[in-house]
Image 1 (spheres, rainbow, N blue to C red):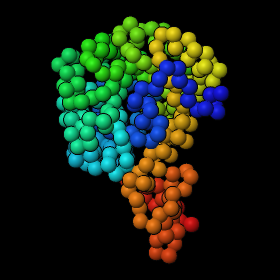
Image 2: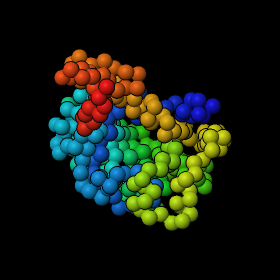
Image 3: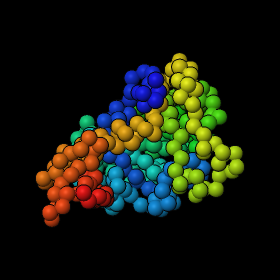
Image 4: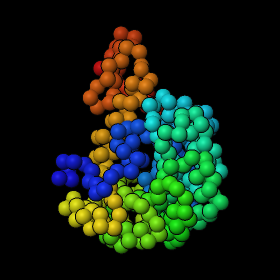
Amino acid sequence: MLEKNLNVSSGALVDGCTLCLVGRKMTLFITGICPNSCYYCPVSSERMGRDVMFANERRITSVEEAVEEARESGAMGTAVTGGEPLVVVDRVAKYVAGLKRALGDSHHIHLYSGFPSLTRENARKLYEAGLDELRFHIIATDGVENSIRVASEFDWRVGVEIPALPGLDFVEVARRAREAGAQFMVLDEYEVNEENFFARAPKANQRSEALVSVPPAKILEEVSRIRGILPVHYCTVKSKYLIQYRNRLVASFYSRRPSGAVLLDDGSALRRARGRIVRFVPVHGEPVYEEL
């Protein structure tokens, strides 16, 4: 069932997941700075440890550029990520407020964090800026539950999102999250790439784990156990690339309306240029990549 459906959920999907699945979330990479050193971090070397910003694949330096990318990509919401967004909390508040002001309150914005020291003052800044949802990486470091408790004092959605690492007790994590005030849980299939396999020099047992994914039958079993604790959603790598990314390409195509182009089933497009037919991806930073 898992391989066929790509995702497994128990309980209603939160708005952040719903918009992401249909390709209508812009990813706002707010900084590459992060105090944690998770060996499984998928952030590229181009961004890791650097105070740079990207809206989807587009390098940006202003709120106006973020708004422009959201409009051009057909986004109905934004996912704020990093690095660790809460190390630049004032910047996050500025961008959240700017996106809401330009695109309206219905533009749903959620944020990922593994920060253990969220203060009430900073939580209030984010709340008043218009942030809709926080997802805490509860296993990133000790004390993240403290941030969940603080965030839970405000009227927004608070949950946890973690990679489905082999050997992790998901039920125990779900219980910790609920006790701290989390309202939902998201499990992401453990995604291994060149960056997180080599860059952080993981220990031998971690390197072995990097070659192993949690079997589908085990995931289904864990989801059935977690659903008695928290609503839970399991998101696969296939879902991200076969559904979410493709849908974002389609939304971007119709939003940008490239002249004379024809959309293909995989989200790429064809266009005649200088007597040749070229195949391209209709998002910023990914120009023509194939001549036919």
